[in-house]
Length: 381
Image (cartoon, rainbow, N blue to C red; front, side, top):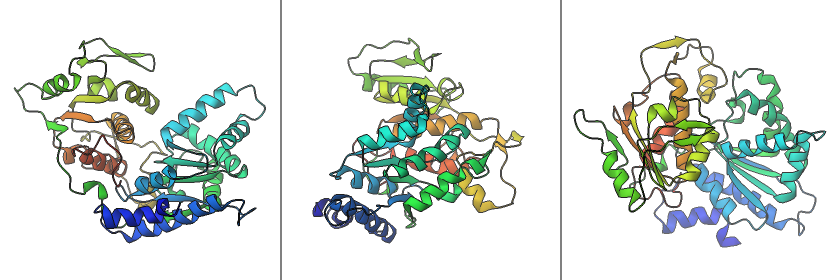
Protein backbone atom coordinates (compact mmCIF):
# COMPACT_ATOMS: atom_id res chain seq x y z
CA UNK A 1 0.00 0.00 0.00
CA UNK A 2 2.84 2.38 0.86
CA UNK A 3 4.21 2.67 -2.69
CA UNK A 4 0.73 3.33 -4.10
CA UNK A 5 -0.30 6.02 -1.63
CA UNK A 6 -1.07 9.48 -3.07
CA UNK A 7 2.06 11.06 -1.60
CA UNK A 8 4.27 8.22 -2.87
CA UNK A 9 2.69 8.56 -6.34
CA UNK A 10 3.45 12.28 -6.34
CA UNK A 11 7.10 11.68 -5.43
CA UNK A 12 7.41 8.96 -8.11
CA UNK A 13 6.00 11.32 -10.73
CA UNK A 14 8.53 14.02 -9.85
CA UNK A 15 11.56 11.77 -9.39
CA UNK A 16 11.01 9.22 -12.19
CA UNK A 17 8.53 10.62 -14.70
CA UNK A 18 9.82 14.15 -15.17
CA UNK A 19 6.89 15.97 -13.57
CA UNK A 20 7.64 19.50 -12.41
CA UNK A 21 7.76 19.82 -8.60
CA UNK A 22 4.74 21.72 -7.29
CA UNK A 23 4.37 22.65 -3.61
CA UNK A 24 0.60 23.01 -3.91
CA UNK A 25 0.31 19.54 -5.43
CA UNK A 26 2.51 18.09 -2.69
CA UNK A 27 0.36 19.70 0.01
CA UNK A 28 -2.79 18.28 -1.62
CA UNK A 29 -1.14 14.85 -1.93
CA UNK A 30 -0.45 14.93 1.82
CA UNK A 31 -4.13 15.59 2.55
CA UNK A 32 -5.19 12.79 0.20
CA UNK A 33 -2.60 10.53 1.78
CA UNK A 34 -4.12 11.06 5.22
CA UNK A 35 -7.57 10.16 3.90
CA UNK A 36 -6.15 7.16 1.97
CA UNK A 37 -4.39 5.72 5.04
CA UNK A 38 -7.38 6.32 7.33
CA UNK A 39 -9.62 4.37 4.95
CA UNK A 40 -7.22 1.42 4.89
CA UNK A 41 -6.70 1.51 8.66
CA UNK A 42 -10.44 1.35 9.40
CA UNK A 43 -11.24 -1.39 11.87
CA UNK A 44 -7.58 -1.66 12.89
CA UNK A 45 -6.60 1.46 14.80
CA UNK A 46 -9.22 4.07 13.89
CA UNK A 47 -12.48 2.27 14.62
CA UNK A 48 -15.31 4.75 15.07
CA UNK A 49 -13.28 7.65 13.68
CA UNK A 50 -15.03 9.91 11.19
CA UNK A 51 -12.95 10.19 8.01
CA UNK A 52 -13.01 13.53 6.24
CA UNK A 53 -13.17 13.70 2.46
CA UNK A 54 -11.10 16.09 0.36
CA UNK A 55 -12.31 18.98 -1.83
CA UNK A 56 -9.61 20.00 -4.35
CA UNK A 57 -10.18 23.32 -6.08
CA UNK A 58 -8.21 25.79 -8.15
CA UNK A 59 -7.56 27.03 -11.69
CA UNK A 60 -7.35 24.71 -14.68
CA UNK A 61 -4.37 22.44 -15.19
CA UNK A 62 -3.13 22.39 -11.59
CA UNK A 63 -3.28 18.59 -11.22
CA UNK A 64 -6.58 18.20 -9.38
CA UNK A 65 -7.93 15.35 -11.51
CA UNK A 66 -4.55 13.63 -11.72
CA UNK A 67 -4.21 13.61 -7.93
CA UNK A 68 -7.77 12.39 -7.36
CA UNK A 69 -7.48 9.63 -9.96
CA UNK A 70 -4.24 8.37 -8.44
CA UNK A 71 -5.93 8.31 -5.03
CA UNK A 72 -8.96 6.38 -6.31
CA UNK A 73 -7.06 3.99 -8.57
CA UNK A 74 -5.12 2.45 -5.66
CA UNK A 75 -7.88 2.32 -3.04
CA UNK A 76 -8.46 -1.11 -1.54
CA UNK A 77 -11.97 -0.22 -0.38
CA UNK A 78 -15.08 -0.04 -2.61
CA UNK A 79 -15.03 3.21 -4.55
CA UNK A 80 -16.47 4.85 -7.65
CA UNK A 81 -15.13 7.65 -9.85
CA UNK A 82 -17.56 9.72 -11.94
CA UNK A 83 -17.54 12.98 -13.81
CA UNK A 84 -20.02 15.27 -12.09
CA UNK A 85 -22.28 15.36 -15.19
CA UNK A 86 -22.48 11.55 -15.11
CA UNK A 87 -23.21 11.54 -11.41
CA UNK A 88 -26.10 13.98 -11.82
CA UNK A 89 -27.49 11.96 -14.73
CA UNK A 90 -27.54 8.92 -12.44
CA UNK A 91 -29.14 10.95 -9.63
CA UNK A 92 -31.95 12.23 -11.86
CA UNK A 93 -32.57 8.77 -13.35
CA UNK A 94 -32.68 7.02 -9.98
CA UNK A 95 -34.83 9.74 -8.45
CA UNK A 96 -37.36 9.20 -11.24
CA UNK A 97 -37.22 5.42 -10.77
CA UNK A 98 -37.72 5.83 -7.02
CA UNK A 99 -40.58 8.30 -7.40
CA UNK A 100 -42.99 6.02 -5.50
CA UNK A 101 -40.65 5.87 -2.52
CA UNK A 102 -41.42 7.96 0.57
CA UNK A 103 -38.02 9.71 0.45
CA UNK A 104 -36.27 9.06 -2.89
CA UNK A 105 -33.10 11.00 -2.00
CA UNK A 106 -32.64 9.11 1.28
CA UNK A 107 -33.16 5.82 -0.58
CA UNK A 108 -30.69 6.92 -3.25
CA UNK A 109 -28.08 7.81 -0.62
CA UNK A 110 -28.56 4.46 1.10
CA UNK A 111 -28.19 2.67 -2.25
CA UNK A 112 -24.95 4.48 -3.06
CA UNK A 113 -23.38 3.93 0.35
CA UNK A 114 -24.31 0.24 0.32
CA UNK A 115 -22.16 -0.13 -2.82
CA UNK A 116 -19.18 2.16 -2.18
CA UNK A 117 -17.22 3.59 0.74
CA UNK A 118 -15.68 6.40 -1.34
CA UNK A 119 -17.16 8.52 -4.13
CA UNK A 120 -14.82 10.58 -6.33
CA UNK A 121 -16.43 13.34 -8.42
CA UNK A 122 -14.53 15.27 -11.08
CA UNK A 123 -15.36 18.86 -12.11
CA UNK A 124 -18.07 19.68 -9.58
CA UNK A 125 -19.93 22.74 -10.78
CA UNK A 126 -23.49 23.81 -9.98
CA UNK A 127 -25.16 25.92 -12.63
CA UNK A 128 -28.64 24.41 -12.74
CA UNK A 129 -31.35 25.17 -10.19
CA UNK A 130 -32.66 21.60 -10.27
CA UNK A 131 -29.20 20.26 -9.42
CA UNK A 132 -28.80 22.86 -6.69
CA UNK A 133 -32.07 21.87 -5.05
CA UNK A 134 -31.15 18.17 -5.12
CA UNK A 135 -27.58 18.47 -3.93
CA UNK A 136 -28.34 20.20 -0.66
CA UNK A 137 -30.29 17.25 0.74
CA UNK A 138 -28.42 14.54 -1.15
CA UNK A 139 -24.94 15.48 0.10
CA UNK A 140 -26.20 15.67 3.66
CA UNK A 141 -27.79 12.22 3.32
CA UNK A 142 -24.61 10.73 1.81
CA UNK A 143 -22.46 12.13 4.61
CA UNK A 144 -24.93 10.90 7.25
CA UNK A 145 -24.58 7.40 5.79
CA UNK A 146 -20.81 7.65 6.21
CA UNK A 147 -19.76 8.19 2.60
CA UNK A 148 -16.29 9.67 2.07
CA UNK A 149 -16.40 12.18 -0.78
CA UNK A 150 -13.37 13.35 -2.76
CA UNK A 151 -13.96 15.85 -5.54
CA UNK A 152 -12.36 18.43 -7.82
CA UNK A 153 -13.71 21.83 -8.82
CA UNK A 154 -12.59 25.13 -10.29
CA UNK A 155 -14.44 26.91 -7.49
CA UNK A 156 -14.19 27.05 -3.71
CA UNK A 157 -17.29 25.68 -1.94
CA UNK A 158 -18.56 29.16 -1.04
CA UNK A 159 -18.41 30.15 -4.74
CA UNK A 160 -20.63 27.31 -5.96
CA UNK A 161 -23.93 28.48 -7.46
CA UNK A 162 -23.08 32.06 -6.42
CA UNK A 163 -26.03 34.41 -7.09
CA UNK A 164 -28.08 31.44 -8.27
CA UNK A 165 -31.85 31.57 -7.95
CA UNK A 166 -32.98 30.48 -4.46
CA UNK A 167 -29.33 30.02 -3.50
CA UNK A 168 -30.29 29.82 0.17
CA UNK A 169 -31.65 26.35 -0.56
CA UNK A 170 -28.19 25.31 -1.71
CA UNK A 171 -26.48 26.67 1.40
CA UNK A 172 -26.90 23.37 3.33
CA UNK A 173 -24.82 21.64 0.65
CA UNK A 174 -22.00 24.16 1.09
CA UNK A 175 -22.12 23.77 4.86
CA UNK A 176 -22.08 19.96 4.54
CA UNK A 177 -19.01 20.13 2.27
CA UNK A 178 -17.18 22.40 4.69
CA UNK A 179 -18.11 20.20 7.64
CA UNK A 180 -17.26 16.80 6.13
CA UNK A 181 -14.41 17.61 3.72
CA UNK A 182 -10.99 19.22 3.92
CA UNK A 183 -10.94 22.08 1.42
CA UNK A 184 -7.60 22.30 -0.38
CA UNK A 185 -6.70 25.00 -2.91
CA UNK A 186 -4.32 24.09 -5.73
CA UNK A 187 -2.71 27.01 -7.50
CA UNK A 188 0.98 26.45 -8.01
CA UNK A 189 0.92 29.02 -10.81
CA UNK A 190 1.67 26.49 -13.56
CA UNK A 191 -0.71 24.81 -16.03
CA UNK A 192 0.61 21.24 -16.19
CA UNK A 193 -1.48 20.47 -19.27
CA UNK A 194 0.92 22.63 -21.24
CA UNK A 195 3.89 20.42 -20.31
CA UNK A 196 5.78 19.84 -23.59
CA UNK A 197 4.81 16.80 -25.64
CA UNK A 198 4.82 15.64 -29.23
CA UNK A 199 2.26 17.74 -31.17
CA UNK A 200 -0.74 16.25 -32.94
CA UNK A 201 -2.86 18.82 -34.78
CA UNK A 202 -6.57 18.58 -34.04
CA UNK A 203 -7.48 22.23 -34.59
CA UNK A 204 -7.50 24.09 -37.92
CA UNK A 205 -8.46 27.62 -38.98
CA UNK A 206 -10.70 27.75 -42.04
CA UNK A 207 -9.00 28.91 -45.23
CA UNK A 208 -11.58 30.49 -47.58
CA UNK A 209 -11.78 28.77 -50.95
CA UNK A 210 -10.02 25.63 -49.76
CA UNK A 211 -11.69 22.30 -48.83
CA UNK A 212 -12.13 21.47 -45.18
CA UNK A 213 -9.15 19.61 -43.68
CA UNK A 214 -11.67 17.53 -41.75
CA UNK A 215 -12.51 15.62 -44.96
CA UNK A 216 -9.06 14.02 -44.96
CA UNK A 217 -9.15 13.55 -41.20
CA UNK A 218 -12.45 11.69 -41.48
CA UNK A 219 -11.16 9.39 -44.22
CA UNK A 220 -8.01 8.61 -42.24
CA UNK A 221 -9.87 7.87 -39.01
CA UNK A 222 -12.67 5.75 -40.44
CA UNK A 223 -10.20 3.39 -42.15
CA UNK A 224 -12.29 0.58 -43.69
CA UNK A 225 -15.55 1.47 -41.98
CA UNK A 226 -18.56 2.25 -44.19
CA UNK A 227 -19.29 5.98 -44.42
CA UNK A 228 -22.65 7.68 -44.82
CA UNK A 229 -24.44 10.99 -44.21
CA UNK A 230 -27.28 9.39 -42.24
CA UNK A 231 -28.35 11.60 -39.31
CA UNK A 232 -27.72 10.55 -35.72
CA UNK A 233 -30.22 10.85 -32.87
CA UNK A 234 -29.49 12.67 -29.61
CA UNK A 235 -32.16 13.33 -27.03
CA UNK A 236 -34.87 12.22 -29.50
CA UNK A 237 -33.62 14.84 -31.98
CA UNK A 238 -32.30 14.13 -35.45
CA UNK A 239 -28.86 15.67 -35.84
CA UNK A 240 -27.63 16.16 -39.39
CA UNK A 241 -24.05 15.09 -40.04
CA UNK A 242 -21.50 15.82 -42.72
CA UNK A 243 -20.23 12.25 -42.60
CA UNK A 244 -20.29 9.38 -40.14
CA UNK A 245 -19.00 5.85 -39.78
CA UNK A 246 -19.19 3.30 -37.01
CA UNK A 247 -16.62 5.07 -34.83
CA UNK A 248 -16.27 8.59 -36.30
CA UNK A 249 -18.81 11.39 -36.67
CA UNK A 250 -18.42 14.79 -38.35
CA UNK A 251 -20.97 17.51 -37.49
CA UNK A 252 -21.31 21.24 -37.98
CA UNK A 253 -21.20 23.52 -34.93
CA UNK A 254 -24.78 24.66 -35.52
CA UNK A 255 -26.06 21.07 -35.33
CA UNK A 256 -24.39 20.20 -32.01
CA UNK A 257 -24.17 23.52 -30.20
CA UNK A 258 -27.10 25.59 -31.42
CA UNK A 259 -29.71 22.89 -30.87
CA UNK A 260 -31.33 22.46 -27.43
CA UNK A 261 -29.01 19.63 -26.40
CA UNK A 262 -27.77 18.96 -22.87
CA UNK A 263 -24.64 17.55 -21.25
CA UNK A 264 -26.48 14.22 -21.08
CA UNK A 265 -26.79 14.22 -24.88
CA UNK A 266 -23.04 14.74 -25.23
CA UNK A 267 -22.47 11.81 -22.87
CA UNK A 268 -24.52 9.68 -25.29
CA UNK A 269 -22.57 11.06 -28.26
CA UNK A 270 -19.22 10.13 -26.72
CA UNK A 271 -20.61 6.73 -25.74
CA UNK A 272 -21.20 6.01 -29.44
CA UNK A 273 -18.15 7.50 -31.23
CA UNK A 274 -14.38 7.30 -30.73
CA UNK A 275 -13.60 10.50 -32.67
CA UNK A 276 -15.73 13.65 -33.06
CA UNK A 277 -15.15 16.20 -35.82
CA UNK A 278 -16.69 19.67 -35.54
CA UNK A 279 -16.62 22.19 -38.40
CA UNK A 280 -17.88 25.74 -39.00
CA UNK A 281 -17.10 26.85 -35.45
CA UNK A 282 -17.51 30.66 -35.42
CA UNK A 283 -15.90 33.26 -33.19
CA UNK A 284 -17.85 32.46 -30.05
CA UNK A 285 -18.07 35.89 -28.46
CA UNK A 286 -19.64 38.69 -30.46
CA UNK A 287 -20.42 42.35 -30.09
CA UNK A 288 -24.18 41.92 -29.81
CA UNK A 289 -24.86 41.74 -26.09
CA UNK A 290 -28.22 40.82 -24.59
CA UNK A 291 -27.85 43.04 -21.53
CA UNK A 292 -29.31 41.04 -18.63
CA UNK A 293 -27.68 37.81 -17.53
CA UNK A 294 -28.82 34.45 -16.26
CA UNK A 295 -27.75 33.80 -12.68
CA UNK A 296 -26.14 30.68 -11.30
CA UNK A 297 -23.89 29.97 -14.25
CA UNK A 298 -20.53 28.23 -14.27
CA UNK A 299 -18.54 31.42 -13.96
CA UNK A 300 -19.93 32.23 -10.52
CA UNK A 301 -16.42 32.00 -9.10
CA UNK A 302 -15.39 35.12 -10.97
CA UNK A 303 -18.60 36.83 -9.98
CA UNK A 304 -17.80 36.30 -6.29
CA UNK A 305 -14.38 37.86 -6.76
CA UNK A 306 -15.87 40.77 -8.71
CA UNK A 307 -18.20 41.77 -5.88
CA UNK A 308 -20.50 44.57 -6.94
CA UNK A 309 -18.57 45.55 -10.07
CA UNK A 310 -20.28 45.30 -13.44
CA UNK A 311 -19.71 42.05 -15.32
CA UNK A 312 -19.52 41.52 -19.09
CA UNK A 313 -22.97 41.20 -20.66
CA UNK A 314 -24.35 37.91 -21.91
CA UNK A 315 -23.96 37.40 -25.67
CA UNK A 316 -26.61 35.97 -27.96
CA UNK A 317 -24.17 33.13 -28.70
CA UNK A 318 -23.57 32.15 -25.08
CA UNK A 319 -26.16 29.36 -25.02
CA UNK A 320 -24.20 27.70 -27.81
CA UNK A 321 -20.94 28.40 -25.98
CA UNK A 322 -22.25 26.58 -22.91
CA UNK A 323 -22.98 23.53 -25.06
CA UNK A 324 -19.54 23.78 -26.67
CA UNK A 325 -17.98 23.85 -23.18
CA UNK A 326 -20.01 20.77 -22.19
CA UNK A 327 -18.93 18.96 -25.37
CA UNK A 328 -15.25 19.70 -24.77
CA UNK A 329 -15.59 18.64 -21.12
CA UNK A 330 -17.11 15.31 -22.07
CA UNK A 331 -14.56 14.58 -24.78
CA UNK A 332 -11.72 15.53 -22.47
CA UNK A 333 -12.93 13.46 -19.53
CA UNK A 334 -13.46 10.40 -21.72
CA UNK A 335 -10.18 10.91 -23.66
CA UNK A 336 -12.08 11.13 -26.96
CA UNK A 337 -10.25 13.37 -29.47
CA UNK A 338 -12.23 16.38 -30.72
CA UNK A 339 -11.09 17.63 -34.14
CA UNK A 340 -12.14 21.22 -34.84
CA UNK A 341 -12.18 23.55 -37.82
CA UNK A 342 -12.95 27.13 -36.78
CA UNK A 343 -13.10 30.62 -38.23
CA UNK A 344 -10.44 31.96 -35.84
CA UNK A 345 -7.37 30.80 -33.95
CA UNK A 346 -7.97 28.88 -30.73
CA UNK A 347 -7.05 31.73 -28.38
CA UNK A 348 -9.48 34.02 -30.25
CA UNK A 349 -12.51 31.74 -29.89
CA UNK A 350 -13.79 33.44 -26.76
CA UNK A 351 -11.37 36.20 -25.84
CA UNK A 352 -13.73 37.98 -23.45
CA UNK A 353 -17.33 37.91 -22.35
CA UNK A 354 -19.61 36.67 -19.59
CA UNK A 355 -18.42 33.05 -19.88
CA UNK A 356 -14.70 33.89 -19.95
CA UNK A 357 -14.08 32.22 -16.57
CA UNK A 358 -15.65 28.92 -17.64
CA UNK A 359 -13.93 29.09 -21.03
CA UNK A 360 -10.43 29.17 -19.49
CA UNK A 361 -10.75 25.48 -18.68
CA UNK A 362 -12.09 24.78 -22.17
CA UNK A 363 -9.13 26.54 -23.80
CA UNK A 364 -6.65 24.65 -21.62
CA UNK A 365 -8.28 21.35 -22.56
CA UNK A 366 -8.31 22.16 -26.26
CA UNK A 367 -4.61 22.99 -26.03
CA UNK A 368 -3.84 19.62 -24.45
CA UNK A 369 -5.83 17.90 -27.21
CA UNK A 370 -3.18 19.17 -29.64
CA UNK A 371 -0.67 16.73 -28.10
CA UNK A 372 -0.13 13.17 -29.24
CA UNK A 373 -0.50 11.86 -25.70
CA UNK A 374 -4.15 12.93 -25.59
CA UNK A 375 -6.42 9.94 -26.07
CA UNK A 376 -4.31 7.77 -23.79
CA UNK A 377 -4.28 7.77 -19.97
CA UNK A 378 -4.85 11.20 -18.39
CA UNK A 379 -1.84 13.44 -18.01
CA UNK A 380 -1.09 15.59 -14.97
CA UNK A 381 -4.23 17.70 -15.37
